Image 1 (cartoon, one colour):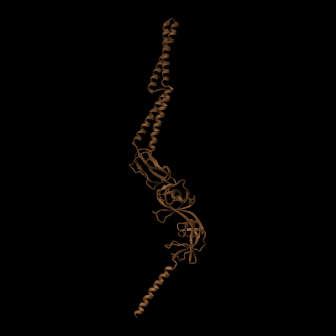
Image 2 (cartoon, rainbow, N blue to C red; image 1 turned 90 degrees about the horizontal axis):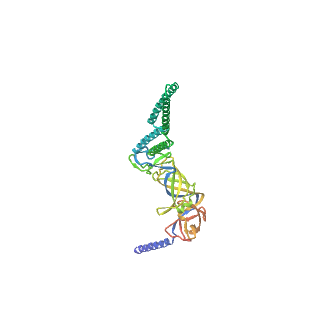
Image 3 (cartoon, rainbow, N blue to C red; image 1 turned 180 degrees about the vertical axis):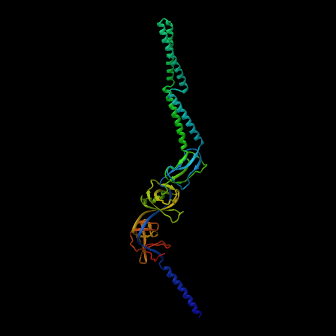
Length: 404
């Protein structure tokens, strides 16, 4: 009995040794994938930043306190709508002073154009009227003396004295009229008109500065990036808010320099936003970059895309994901991207032939994230080796495994 047990133990050990030897010499199990034909879409994924397709910044043009803010972020406004107002009491004082100065200048000009100041004109007119009355009386007296002298009732000396008195009054009247004319010269009128223009310019400037305290929407759109609130102190040039169109957006997509050759204007773009999972926004590439710039450790170009945003859910400044559809191949022969190998001779795959693999050089076409088009070198249904822990060389025997 003991001999039988010993024999069975020895036989079992021998069987295990034989099984191990056979197992060691068996071909390695390698995963394979078969080539298939289907529509392949080549996409390029990147990140981008959203901005309005058209926007304008509204900046303060005066210094002062923000007395009121009439809008909020996300509010739609018409062109010219009031956004905010800046309070500056000095401006109202300047306007009132300008109005008073202008009225005074107009009054002075009117007086000059009418011949002088009212007081001076009244004094001269009164003296002229008195001189005219005196001249009339003196003329009558002179005529009466002439008649008396003809009758030998008056002396010639009396007549001569009366005539001299008339000439003296006439000279006085002429002097008053000359004085009235000399009250206003062309130079005086020109200077008065200049003072009117100066006063008007001062008033216009004050009103213009006052108008700058009321900030209006430069275009119709949506308010975003509102930077001020009532009570804030602002200086000229300070940003108050942005107003832009949000129904159509522009996305700056940052594409790595080596990939820029795949991008062309008009290619479809799909935008996603991590904050709204499941939502997509569609658009097209508007234009390619004109320069390369650093972005961290990368060299990128800014590809400008136009995106429809009918629900206005995307907002300016948002960081988004972009997928640019760079090419489409119908009925393309494809293999998993991981099956493609490369060396100094070019691209190749390890093709299953019988129970071993052979090198097969291939020419590739477009690719997606996981698949690549084979333009030349394979046919539909061919099996190509996928990466494995077991190093493979052309001619190696394998045990093919298909599926996951």
